[in-house]
Every structure is written in structure tokens, then in C-alpha cells.
Length: 297
Length: 284
Image (cartoon, rainbow over all chains, first blue to last red; front, side):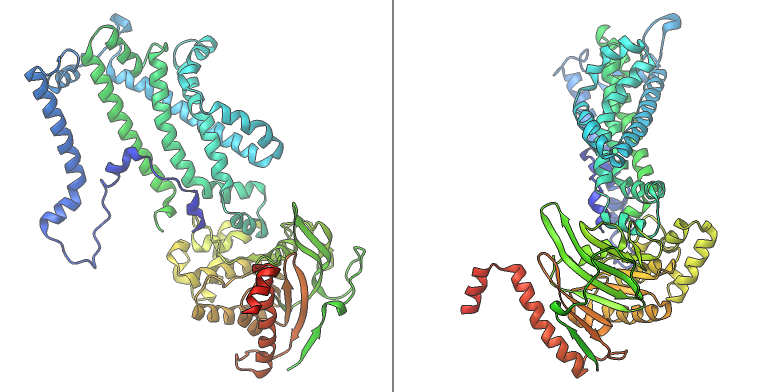
């Protein structure tokens, strides 16, 4: 299938959990032993849990044995009660914000930035593909914006829209727009010519060509692009929140540093890891549903 | 067995001006040259494809046969000369023209029936109606069971059959095929050739087919156009009047086959090797 040339590989980050959903056992295969079946069914989640248990156990042991300071690297026995007690907050009185609220604030920023970035990237990619002149004029600019570190936009964002959500969304947008747009142009460019020729000879106009051929043909690459951009957005917003946008999960961590409360920092890190991982799984599920024809072959 | 031979020099003179063809030509190329940048794909090609006939273009790869199809389909414009379809100059893709490639190019994100319905939908037919018509057409070729399945669930031959059904769904008067069976195995290929012939006879469409396969060309063609490269030129035009179904053992066909084989081999060699290399090969 020529369409598969456009697919990109999943990021290495999900190489291990990828196998968490093993393919259904084939009926034709000889029945394997019970232990083998258990390993096949639960092997990866089990090793996932086991690996973490070992690491946390060593951590606990190291803190108890005094290998490192539990004030700098608080062990699970301190962090988990701290998390459960709901003490992971910053600010006082009406300014006081908790962990869940911080997560919510950060997630809204990412989602809005990601959606705006995606829409703008596809929109600009559409114009670049449709108008030859724009490919010459706009694409070089987009390509030069792409590698700029998102944190570099923070002073600019704050100067234009002040601190808070708009600035964070701006930073997320700038972090992902350039690379998303380049990836989208590449994805549309690599749609096989034959698909376009067939559609045109069957009478498809420009709008129909985009809707029924170019978008679906590029969808696998676009979905991978969204997942990669999600990671970039996630990092950009946290960096932005640490670098002056005084709210959200990043701010929670930076306050932990300033108050020398490493448990707070640890809780923030756990939240970032867990939420990021969960959302990537969700996006992966969405990807499988949206580009259903890709797995079939 | 009636074989009429036209040497390149005796080719019927083409009018230089963009006059409307007076004959019943479905497609007409008038002194067409097509260049892509510095590369001239075809040079000074004049060809008339009579309506309702099965014309096969044969020649070594890279001799511009596919370019000729793109021109007829209106996907490319000639650098020089003119292309007309049914007497009118080709300026873009036409509703009366369908294209088939070596790869079936069915859209994997649509069900089989939606693929067949695609052209009908593009022509403004309502979704439900188009899908119903697509199922009807699929039923005719014994693929009812696969209507709701994606093309990935079909075998190679079935996919190419669906591609044919999709192309014929809009009832084109001109069918352009670029090595349509090149990717199929020998047996499937023979079945598909028979299927194509019967579909073509029922539809009354004009077919222009590009192939590398001499055997296929001899079995199918009313008229055989032999190309040489590069740039692509017409070397010879042959009419084959043998009745169908044809047998591979027909002595007349075998005679043409042997002669064309030599011609094609020489053309392929010319495309692959330089003058010096050929001299060395010949001396061995």
C-alpha cells in the first residue's frame, strides 16, 4: 500500500505500554500453557508494575539507609501521604490553589492551544498546497519558526496578553504551530499522486478532493503529528508556567522549589507523568478509531 | 487474419491546425510533444484512436506511453500540438473519461461500495442512490459480499476488479488504462483480461491501454501502437482483425508476436545500453 509511506512511527516513549493490549490469541494456534497465556495476557502490565515497585522499593530503602537526603528526594512513604492529604497546594486564603485545580488549568491551556495550533497548521498547510506563491513565501517562515524554543515566547506573550491563560495558550500555540504546519505540508505532499489522479478523473473538485482524499490519506500522519505535538505542548506549557505565567502545574512545581518543599515538587512531577501518559493513551485510542484502516494491513 | 501495417513514414498526415476532427476518432493526438523541464517524454506523436475500439500502446518503459494517457485524461497539457477527445480539445479531466492504474488505488478509508460510488457522488448523485447503484454493480461481478468491507479485505484480483467497476460506474465513453494488470499473477491476469473484454463489449466504450506485455496486447487489441523511447515516438501501428476470443496459438498472431518481440527487444536494449555497450554485447 502506497498510503503507508505516509505513516510515521509511534514515539519511542510508548514502546513498552504499546504492547499492553496484546492481539487476541489466534484460534488456529495450539493452546499454550496456562503460565504462558498469563504472561501473554498480563505480562506487560505486570512487568510495568513490577519495574516501578522495584524502583520505589529501592528509593524507600535508600532514604531509610541515609544514602541520600529525604528532604531532597522525599521517598514514597512521605510523598504519597502528602498527596492524599491534599496538602499539595500553593498560595493562601482565596489565592490558594490545589493540585487538581492546577492540573485543570494546565490541561485547558494545552487543549485550547493544541486545537488552535492544529486548525491553524492545517489551514496554513492547505493554503501552501493550494497556492504556489504561498509555498515560496510562507513555508520558509513557518520552517524558521518551528525550531524556536517555546519558552522564548514567554516574555513576548506576557507583554502582549499579560499573565494567565491567554499567554499560556499563546506559548503552546507557538510551540507546536511551526512543526505541525511543516508536518502537515509534508503529509499532504506525500499523498500518492495516483489517488489525486483517480479522484480528479472521477470528477472530484478541489473541495471534494480535500475532504474525501487528501485529509483521509494524510490522516495517519496527522494523527501521529497531533500526538507528538501533545508532548511538545505539555512541555511548553509547563515551561511557560515556570517562567512567569504564575498559575498551573508548572507554577506549583516552581513554588515547591521556592519554598523548598520537595514533596510538592515530587507531587507535581507525578501529576505530569500520570496525566501525560493517560492522555497519550487516549490519543492513541482515538488514533486507532479515526484511522481504522491503517491497522488492517 | 487481416494485418495492416503502417510504417512511420506513411502515417496519415495530421492537420497542423487545431481543426475539429471530422472522423469518428474518440481521441486524437496531433503532433504532440510533451516535455518535463529538460526531458522530452514524447515527441511529435500523431495518433487517432477510433471510437469504440480497443487500442493498446506497447513499448519499453520510459517511452512516454503513460504521459500520452495523462494527456488524453486532461491531467497534463501538451507542450506542443493538440489533443482532442470526441472532436473537442482536452483542457482538463472530463466526465466521460476514466483512468485505471497498475495499482488499484482504491481508497482504503472507504468501504468497497463507497469506492465504487465515488464517481457517482462526484457527479452529484445522492449518497443513498449512489451506494445502491454501487451495490448493484458489485453484484454483477460477484462481489456483493464485499460491498461493506474495506478494500484491504479483498484479494489483489478482486481489488483490480473493483477498480474496473469504479471506473465503469460513471459510464465513461473513454477508458484509459495504464498497465492495469501489471501487478497481478499470470492466472488472475488472464481472468481479468477476459472480464475486461466482456465489460468493454457491453459498454461500447473506447479503450486505450498501456502495457509491457506483448501477449496481453495481442490478445486484446484491435489496434496495436508500438512506441520507442526516448523521447517517445510511434514506431509502428498495426491493426489486428483476428476475431475474439483469441487463441495464443493463432499462427497469424504468433507471427506478429515474433516480429514485435524482436522489435521490442531492440527498443529495450536501446533504452538500457549505450551504443558502445551494445557493440560490445554484439561482438560476443
